[in-house]
Length: 153
Image (tube, rainbow, N blue to C red; front, side):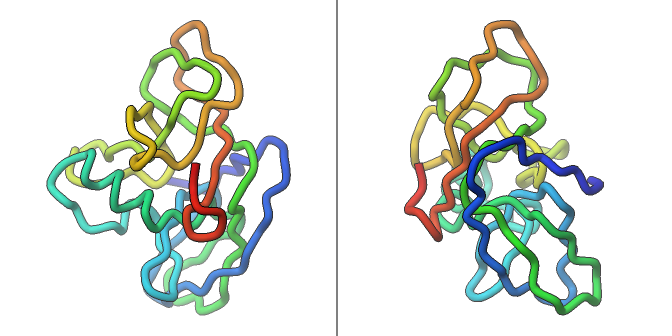
């Protein structure tokens, strides 16, 4: 995936997070906190099912990357912990306030760092729909809430 500024409006309440030198982060990546470092959703080890992956990710959801980190970089990155962001999603409709979580990758064996999907459980959600989507669309505005910094949705 390439850098894509996804922030649309609202306070981002940014934090600065450490990144391991081997970790690659793109602007717009959904990030989780692993011990003391930020990592993209795609780096989360596969738990065997989409629901299990979403639940583990949500429990350590840090926010959305506002800066990139290339392999070999040791500088920390700015991470938005709140705010409204536009993410790609499978073609569907959304109602205002519906729960949204990280989506699975194309291989079905982990999470995507820059795509979301509707979820039924708050324990799988990283945010709520901020603008109703009455006709099927492939992007959605979501109001994110960092589990690490704000306690989640």
